[in-house]
Amino acid sequence: MTSGKPEAGVPFITFEGPEGAGKSTQIACLVARLQGTGVPHIVTREPGGTPLGTRVREVLLDPELSIDPLPEFLLYSASRAQLVTHVIRPALAQGHTVICDRYFDSSLAYQGAGRGLPVGLLRDLTREATGGLSPHLTVLLDLDPALGLRRVASRGQPDRLERADLGFHQRVRQGFLDLAAAEPRRFLVLDATRSTDVLAGEIWKAVERQLS
Ligand SMILES: Nc1ncnc2c1ncn2[C@@H]1O[C@H](COP(=O)(O)OP(=O)(O)OP(=O)(O)O)[C@@H](O)[C@H]1O
Ligand SMILES: [Mg+2]
Image (cartoon, rainbow, N blue to C red):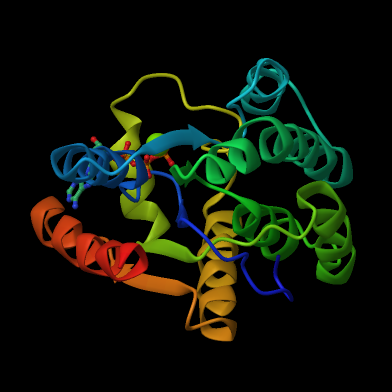
């Protein structure tokens, strides 16, 4: 995880960034390329990806619920622990490239930089939840949160996190950038205002390097 080295083998790739940065869009582009080249892979997401994670996701995104920062982090961690054990590790062991829409960097950015929980505590608990599994490549789609929230506004009712104030989302963005600066070899930071095709090309170049 954050202080450890990724394990050898097929790539484990995560996508991070604020709301509406284009993670789902770019994952779809990457999946099309992987399918086209016959690379075995799976796609999963956080929170979610397992029956438990799906239930936890409903709780975390529910706009009716008020959730304090620590229980919020623990809920994400519960989903993550289940996902690592039952989905990510088995897929990597079978030689499948794993693509995950958000992973522990989101917790460090949202609950650490955003909510102000102590990052040392978050890292310790994350190490327990993941067994120290770190991605080989993390694509950070960086975007002004005001623009990202505008992009997703047309989707209908905002979820619990989309409703948080802009200051929170700005701290999250900076949190992601700080994480990337601390681990430049793992992160590919991209300006998410560029076109979908240009971004997909940059991401594919980085993924090809991981696959070779
Ligand atoms: N490069 C881009 N330029 C302009 N608009 C984009 C770009 N990429 C995605 N979009 C649009 O922005 C919106 C949000 O994209 P997407 O759902 O991929 O973001 P996301 O990061 O997955 O969002 P969320 O955090 O809510 O999961 C969509 O309407 C999508 O079509
Ligand atoms: Mg998405």
